[in-house]
Amino acid sequence: MNDRLRLTVSRVFTASLLGLAVGCGTAYAEIVGTDEAAASVEPANQNADREKLRAFMERPEVAKQLQKMGVSSDEAKARVAAMSDAEVRMVAGRLDMLPAGGRITNTELVIIILLAVILLVIIL
Image (spheres, one colour):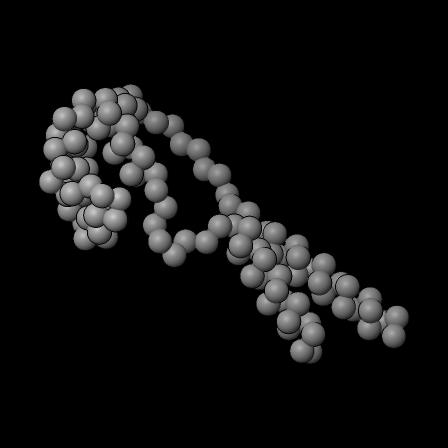
């Protein structure tokens, strides 16, 4: 009984460490040139961000959500057209930071791996 408990605890500990190692990301650092830094602060084409917002507003799921909120797509497009360049740049920057659908976090990944390992240990 003591050997089986020791084996089970060691398997769970090993699986936990493996899950932690897989779940932790790696950081990368690179030197950024002046031209890249300047391009990230101020886009070369001022209308690029405005076009990005217009394209976002034309997506069917966005139009549907706007209708639920009581805003017509024409009214939303007019509001985007009335925004200043700084406001457009800020909103477009937020759009770029939004996660894509179906993405799980590192914590969720570790929990899934741990549950799978625990189930494997129980089955074996």
